[in-house]
Length: 381
Image 1 (cartoon, one colour):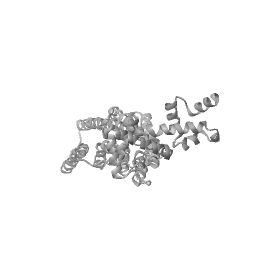
Image 2 (tube, rainbow, N blue to C red):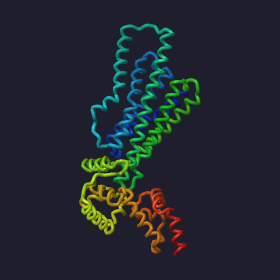
Image 3 (spheres, rainbow, N blue to C red):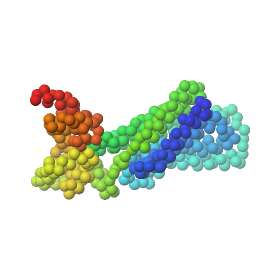
Image 4 (cartoon, rainbow, N blue to C red):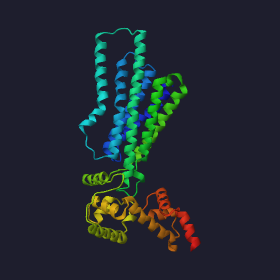
C-alpha cells in the first residue's frame, strides 16, 4: 500500500491513544491508562510495519528491532486494561510482573545483539537471510500464540463482570462493557490476521489483503475512540463500597448459594422493613438506584441487603428492582389518565433509562411487549 495512505490509516491510532490518556471525563482512570498504553503499542506496531515495508531506516536496523519489542508486551498490556475495567480496586501483585517476562528477555537478547553488531559487522550470507526469515515467522507465531489466549481470558472476565452487574445494579446498559467485549473479539481476529500474514506473507503477496487489514485496523480504532469518549464511570463508589461489592460477588457462586448470615426470624423482619420502604418511598423510580444507595436508605450494609434479597426473595438485585418497575409500568399503561404518555415516556417514568432494556425486561416478565400488553388490556377492558 502507498506509504501516504498507510500513514493516514495509522495516524488516528496515535490520536486515539492521546484521547484515552487525556481521559476528559476522568473515569475508569487505571483502566484507561493501561488501555491508552495498549493503543500506543498498536500504533508502534503499525508504524514499525510501515517503515519496514518502505525501507525508511535501512541504515539503522536497530530501530526495527527496538520497535519489535512492543510485540512482546502488547498482549499483557491489553489484558491489564481489561482487568482494571472489571476490577478497578485491584492491587498490583508481584506475579503480575511475570506477564512481561518474555518481553524483558527479548530486550536483553536485543541489547546483546547490538553489542555483537558493534564489535563486528559481518556481511549476511544467503543462509543467514533465510535463517532470519525463519526466525521472524517463529516469533510471529509466538506473538500471536501469546495474544489469542489473553483475548480468551479477557472475554470471560468481561462476561463474568456482566453477570455480576445484576447483583448490585438496576440499570446495566451503560456500564455493561459490551463495547469492550467487541473490542476483545476484534483484537482476537486481528491477531488471527497477523498470524496468517506472518505465516504466508499475505501483505507482501496480496494487495487486497493488505488493504483489507488496514481498513479493519482503522475501523477498529474508530470504534474504540467512539466508545472511549462516551464511557461512564463503571464503579462510581468509594473504596469501602467497592470492597462491599467485591464481598457480594465473592459470596455469590454459580449456584447462588450463600452462607447463612442471620436467623430466619431476623430475615423475615428485614424483609418486611425492605418491603415497607419499597412500597412507601418507591426507590425503584430512581433510574440510578443501586445496591449501595438502597442499602443506605434502609440503614444496612450492601452485603446484608444483597443477602436479604437473594435469600428472602430468591432474586438478585436487578430482578428485584425491575420487578417493581414493571409493575409500576403496567399500572401506568392501564391508567386512562396517563394515555398521553408514550411507551418510552412510561419506561422513563417507571425508572428505566433505556427503551430497549424496558421492552426486553417487560417481555421477559409478562410474556408480552408493552405495546401488546396495552392493546390486550384495551380489548379486555
